[in-house]
Length: 342
Image 1: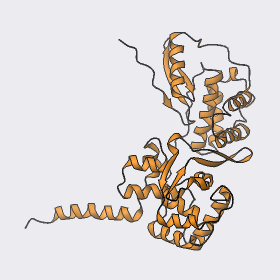
Image 2: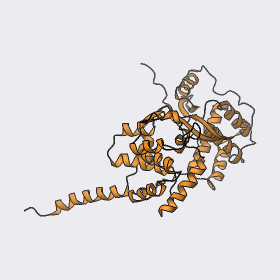
Image 3: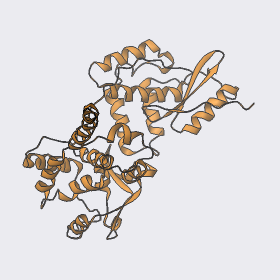
Image 4: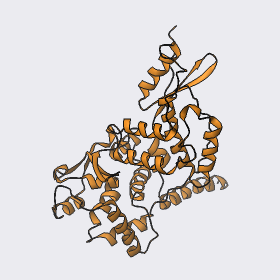
């Protein structure tokens, strides 16, 4: 009978973990690539590679910096920038400890301290990075850290009346195009900034680039994932807007992400509505598709998602007006059941 291969599990850090049993002990292998993690786990289980090799003599800080440097060419500049901020700001309590001397208790105490000032998600992401580093340089050390319980955050999206107010308030301003691209097409801010004039053929927009913030400022890169590269049909309103938009260089929208955020905040104030994040407009677009009965497969393609997980757990929020309609439909059904038969 063919032996079943260990199944890779995706960690909060984005890496993949495979677990195998060796001499009665569960051992984890972590790698950025799922198939590589699986292959390493199989090799470890088969004795092809040694489990208890002596850890590299480095402090946690040195190991983290070495790990970041080794991923510099394959990860997004914004991801590398985020890793470096973690190295600088979040590992003080364990930074000078030799990785060979690191214990579960020391890790747990560090996590406990971090949890006093950081959100559960921030703690989980930071711990996930350290876990990936240890998997690289001390693979026999299996972490069993207790992390703070994640808090479910309700993502706010503008109501239909608020969307109308935002659209009316932005018309004629330099923020109209980026705001409409987010509302109507569901584009990320980074994708809007990455749009160049050759991305627009007169009827469609080709989403293939993004501008993110790296260690040295704005950096152009590919889309967030393979699925992120896509072509979206442009409605006539946006075609007309693009055709009259100033051509100031190769990029369509020539402003920083900070400028867009500040401008959108002023538009919300002008519209007389509560403050929303610019990214909430993307949430809105996904919610409109959900409320309109658009199939997940199409929604995923339009928004540039590889799986429906993010769409279902984060982006699909029904609009409040639609919720009331659904409530009325349900109530009406049961109210009719309560009526006596004629």
